[in-house]
Image 1 (cartoon, rainbow, N blue to C red):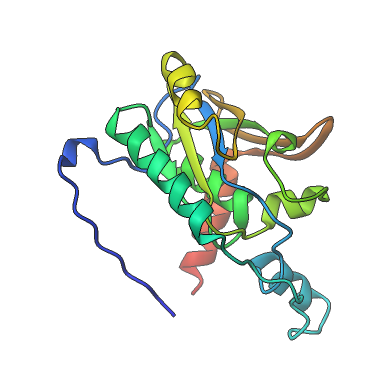
Image 2: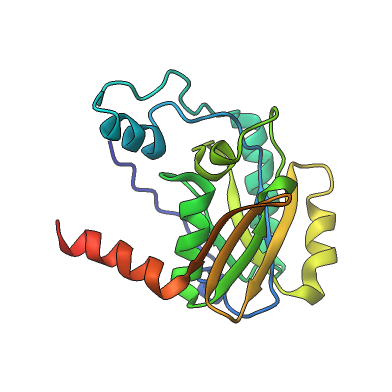
Amino acid sequence: LLFSVLGRIDDVARAVTLDVKAPGEAVYVLGRTGNALGASAYFRMLAREQGDPAAVGSRPADLDAPAARDLYRAVEEAIRRGLVRSCHAPTRGGLAVGLAFMAFAGDLGLDVDLDAIVRDEPMEPDTLLFAESNGRILATVAPDDAEAFEDLFADLPAARVGRVTPDKRIRMRCGDDTLVDADLDEMKEAWKTTLRDL
């Protein structure tokens, strides 16, 4: 099922793309992360590898529509004020894939600690990486705008989780545990190779 959505933008110069723009930008995860792995890309991959393609879990992502509306309105206000440098809604593959896409597009690295994200319950690191919770937004913000940006989200689930780096590596941690430490170009080539083989 595919939904295509069109929205009116009063000033196209304020449109925000997904590519991270500069080293030093603060990286934010906006919205709550839930234990939403049922029918996720991660569980589908594990089911295939284990030889049981139907075993994709039983807890799919849901959506708290009023909470998402409030969050999206704050994001729109932050964009209107020119506080958001890049923005992306993580979907298939969760935060790991969404963050990687932002780094791929900007050709810059990321240093992220997922331990900081707002979550519904304690979670294992793989859940933090791959849960496909709805209603979340990834954003980067220039250092000088971080305080104003955080003020807009003071009463909403939002967390600064890291920064954009110049060294073209994607590093994702959960506290002291390193989950991902990979060369950006190698990851991007692996992703493109898969697409070429289709």
